[in-house]
Structure formats: structure tokens, C-alpha cells
Image (cartoon, rainbow, N blue to C red):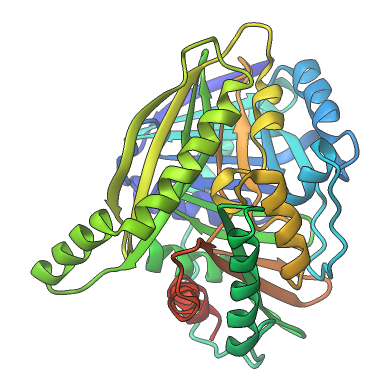
Length: 429
């Protein structure tokens, strides 16, 4: 049972900053921010959930069944993440690579305190055990003086797991699998990392968010683990019986000169290689959604739309379906995870080849962060353009990747990885 009070916010941008700064006192934090990007399917401009009343943390074994039981038992707001290695729960797959960041495979919590911001209206939803705190907390947050971000220089070195020569060799190996007919496309990723790294997660999040200004930004904290995400991509949303997936495939850099920038968008839209990548993943998503959809309800709402972000243009498609009543919310996640944009097609073969060629375990990278509502709706992003930090181990990491097809030029794919790494490198350098 939650107590809800609404407030009018005169300066939503300032209040979001105050809200996240105030949240740092808690062990569990999930902050989601649209950065005022006008997403057609978004319900909120920003969301904050803090302070676990109950939680679930598990490895991949029976993870989706455990999540379903937890979600159906609580019937409340739940916030958390799905790591990439939950693939091992649904398929006969393994993940035996190095994992230095060490997030759990699955984690969700039921927050005592929840903040939902839309335009200038803030709703505070508190569990009954702490409802007397609502007014006090709002006043404290509103009166907070923001801490000015420092200009300290980091004294650690960002290292690259795969150098250019080995990257190109591995991409060519992946293309051999394509030529043999094992796959049509696969997403190949590499890690950048630093040991003995001490960072201020909140400061780094604000810097990353200021650079990228993405529609699916996340600050996540679970004890000593942090995710600072500038994700532009929605994995999956459920609203009533409607399911929405918005895979990204196709990227080009932006230009400061307007005519040149428009030319880049047009070139991306007409690029045969980029379009083929996107269409292949759309077909995969259609197939995944059909497993829980009412017959004939899977629809491609938009194919290969071009969307502009602060540093890049992306090609994004939207696929929707209507959920068959025999399936649950968690069934939709279980039958579509991991998202096709981060695996390839066919999905299982692509994941097997990825495991063989990549050097490190993906963990939370290529996973998803989001929430369930009490009604069983949900919304999850794709964990890309993200910094992961293990405060205890002083280990910081981020990964980038690109889709490899028969038309891919390995050197250009390597350059695309560096383009995607630009914001994270700027923050950590």
C-alpha cells in the first residue's frame, strides 16, 4: 500500500539534479532520465526509485522464473536489471570469459520511495511504513544546494582489451561464419577498462549525460556497483496488452554544419549495408514477439527511421504486438532476451560465435535496466554507451560494438566502435 502526494515543480531540470544528489545516501538507487527527448512511448520525463523494502538477486539459473514469482507476489513497482548472461537461463549457452566488474545476473528491488516526474508534476509514492516522510523529504530535496563538479584529473589509464589488428582478425573470422551460412549478422563488442580506478560516480554520470543527452539515461547503484548509462535505445515496453520494441542498427556521426549534417542523415538512410543490418534485426524482433503475441498482431510500425542525438544519428525501427492473454509480462522478456540488436541473427548461433570471439564476459553490458508497474507493465532500455564501476575492486569498464555482416569493412567497424566510445573516453580521460 503506497501513499501518494503530488507537487508542482517550477524548475524540473534543477529538481532532477537535486533529486539524484539527495539519492546518494541510499544503498539502492535507480534514476531514469529522458533528458526531455520527446519519445512517443514514454510515460515519464524522469523516475527515481530508492531504498529497497524487498529485493531479488540471483545468477542466471531459473532467473526468469524467480523474477516472475517475485513480480507476481509483490504486485508493486520493481526496479532493476537483466544482465546479458541471462541468455544461459533460456538456451543451452555458457559464459566462461573473464568478468572483472562482477554484477549479479539479475537484480530487482521494491523501493520504499518512488518519484515520478512528468512535465512540471511530481508524484511521490511512498510505502505506508514511511509515508510521514514525504513532505519532509520534498522540502529537503527542494532546498539542496548542488555540489559543483570538480575538475580533478584521473590518474588511471584506460586500456583496450582488443587492439586494432586483433579486432580486424576477429571480424574477418566472424565474416567467415557468415560466408558459411552459420549467421547473417552478429554484434561484436570489445571492452575498455582501468584497474586501480577511483571515480566519483555521480560526477561522472552528470558529465556523461551532459555530453550525450540520451532518452534512456540511467544512474544505477546497488551497494558498491554502479552503472552510468547514456543509452539511446529502448529494448522493450509493455503498456496494457501492447508490446513495443525499438531496435537500433545503423550509426553515423553528426556534423556542426547543418547542410553537412543533413547529408550525413540522408547517406545513413540510403546506406544499403546499414539498412540490411536494421531489417535483419527487425525480422528477428518480429519472430521473438510472435512467441507471445496474439495471432497476426505483430506489426512494423516504423522501418529504418533516422533519429538525431547529440553526437550521432541512429537508424531506429519500431515493432509492436498485442500480448496473448495466456502469457505474462515476464514471459515477454524471457522469450525476447537478449535483445536482437546486441546479438545478431539467427540469435542462438550468433551468441555462440560471440562467446567464442569476444574476450570478456559482457555482464550488464548488452543487458537491460528498467521497471515494472503494479499493473504488470514495464519499460526497459538497452545497456549501451555505459560506464560500469566496481567501487570495491576499483575497476571501471565500458564496452562498445558494431554489427558485422558480409558487407562490413573491418576497418570501418573499428572506427565505428571508437565513435561510440567517444563520450565515455571523454568522461574518463
